[in-house]
Length: 495
Ligand SMILES: [Zn+2]
Ligand SMILES: [Zn+2]
Ligand SMILES: [Zn+2]
Figure (cartoon, rainbow, N blue to C red):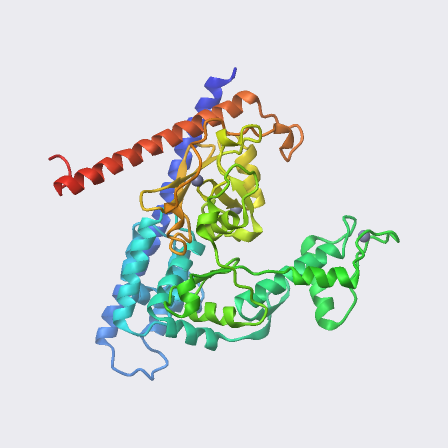
């Protein structure tokens, strides 16, 4: 710690610049929202004075879109899209548009939400869904495009299941070829669970049929394998080694296909048909209740009830039991780092506070309250990068939150994406104490050889972590006191 002064100066500058980046990011969203509002206002004025002829090719939307496009030099399609989006902001999802202007969501998130709502035709339902989405966006901490889309999809599915169902049928299946200047792509459109299973099969098969000496990139191996399978061609490792270890028997291939699993999380009431509560497909996101029931009814679907009380049993083991593993992945849905959409079942399950292998009862618990999925990169970053910390907190309503603290000293909070799907999980009593001696990560396990990471830095990380936890506990305690006072006196302080 000889360079304390230098490093603290650098980190102050980092902190300030990062704060400015966050501010500008929100301001960009806000500016985009204001731009849409202006486009919407012009459209409304012109619509009001236009001749009532909706058969005209050159209607207001087309002309206004073309005009804006010419003035900012973008394509006419982009201009027309802007006018459509402005109409959505003005007439269909004004509360979500307000969240955009307030910098709560980005323009791409707004766009994704508008698209999810496109099938709603009833004005009252639209208004209710708009209000629900906006309230949820504002209450959930950091919102990514993926999590915003899921929020919208959930409320649309629950308020207007028929619209979603029709849209699912209309969107349909198909095989398309698309091309741009650089290449050509084959797109297979099918149900998400079918596409996900196919993608898993391609990845697993390509990995098993090639060895480390194959000259192709991972992507190229998968593409070659998929094309070979579709056209009846051959696929093999190109290492040229007659002893190539990547030769797989037909039995092994069959065994591997039998282990391809797409996880769907649904409430029992959804599967029974008692409710239209939405469900979740790992690697895809929210699906409507009908879709969940369709999947459940298919041959080959295995339904396993989740025993929530088992999820918190035996927290002294390093490996979570099946219930805890499932519950932790299901409630988060994806890697817990804000913005990361890596599927929960394709992620590592991380002990947020490190497990202590020597004294399990003293370290971070193997309990859903302390387990969160992390993609491999975020898991490595969290484990080995100084100053990168995370915490998992369960609030008074049983909602699980993740707080990610980055090396610049900024932190961002996000609610567990699927908190609505497993609302009882965070209310289960934990069968363990608070961590008093979290496990210590061996720096020798760091992915890059020679990366120095001293015990002092680790201790610093632990101190900071416990300080943050203490601060959160204080906030929660204050909140609990405030609530209790509110119940007693029925008014906000001062009394
Ligand atoms: Zn080989
Ligand atoms: Zn991640
Ligand atoms: Zn716990």
